[in-house]
Length: 152
Image (cartoon, rainbow, N blue to C red):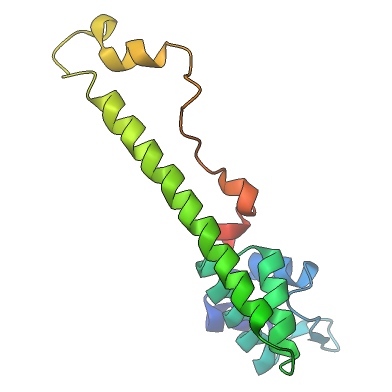
């Protein structure tokens, strides 16, 4: 199948398929005499695997590790368990950060009842103050892999 057919079969944009090829997650496909990429069923299965991992917010490195174990099934799976445990810990840390962010926003929202003019708005006044050291940090989406996390 050609790249457009693979894209349609897996609900994956063509650009993302090419990206995964460049990153070495998808093997190089055969080429037709007209130099079109020709993908096999194995490409579609691997792409579904990658997309499932991406839906779980896994990084490309995590996916590489899982694919290595998938491709070499005689390896012990304890490394797979450790990877998932580490990823789960990362998700739990992000959840804690987001909960702290939520609490900070709720507190900020409580500073204004919306009945004053903007010059007396408690939210605007609070936002004008220096940041306290205890301000929650929100994970940078790019730190756990680019728009790659949601592009594929």
